[in-house]
Length: 427
Image 1 (cartoon, rainbow, N blue to C red):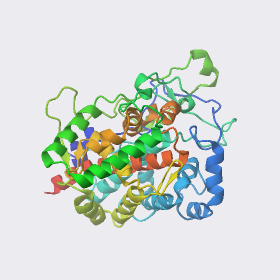
Image 2: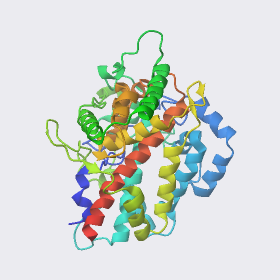
Image 3: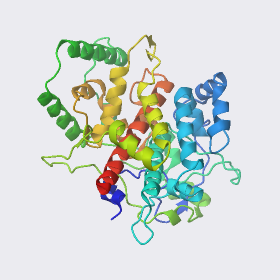
Image 4: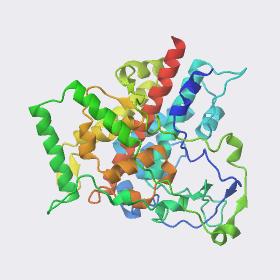
């Protein structure tokens, strides 16, 4: 059996390329918003691009499209990270590697790993795993940031919107695709004159003081992780799709098999790592198989320098900070960034023995957890309403920063499971 298939059920193929409406039709419609994102005002993204001239240089140097596409424009709100991202993606798709160039692009579109007579070599498998994890995670950023479709010169109105399981890309800008009361809920009951931002900063300060005064015992930290892990199973994602009336799009529908040729099982998708109600949920102890000590060396040994590029990207996004929170400056955001990254891993059953998961429950309110689970596990269900529902006083660039963290945490989680399976196969 192919080693990747051993852990296949734990990997999330929630890529925008992996599902198609049963009748294989594509919806063609005018976009509901201008600019690169349905969530972020165009002027904010344009302003960032004009200020940072280095972005254009990076695009010329590393972009696979050769132009400033919508994803790159939104990522350019964090130009330092953008360089790491473009270098890694360019290396995967264009530079020397075990897989031929056409295969790499097919893998970016498919779930392409099969057993049989023509099994791949280990270097080919690792290359494929990295590509799959990259594009699964990139789907989270695309939908989480409301990235608009690229203009297609072959379509009269310039846009082609693809229907995926009764979902249309233009749903990103709609508020009516999800009716979830929990989005406006809050676990912390902010009262008096404290704003959401001030309350969050107060909790961050309290956590630092408590950590300095007394550290939780290992037993208590284990209990807190198990509690957070179980609760993550009950975090409801935006799972109510918006169905368009027949008359709205009938005139613009065309029959196509452009995507279906790559799909064997359109219903294959993310499943929680454990069933609700199970008493003992599986746990992946990060200390037993870490990126730094195990995954990095395996990837670098079998796929040239990609390990260094991925490691740089992971470190870049984890440590990226401007020491600001909305209107406040000189703020240490380490605690908050770590909570975001570790919560994604917690949802995938990955535990760090030296981390107190009580911090996750203190820092991430319910609406943010709903957003994180949707973006990470069911990205195509993300809506602007969900994007707007958390951290309402924060800047759009700060929310893009959150999406970068979620994307890289998502990618690293998938790599850890896949690379651990390959390591077990080797030993």
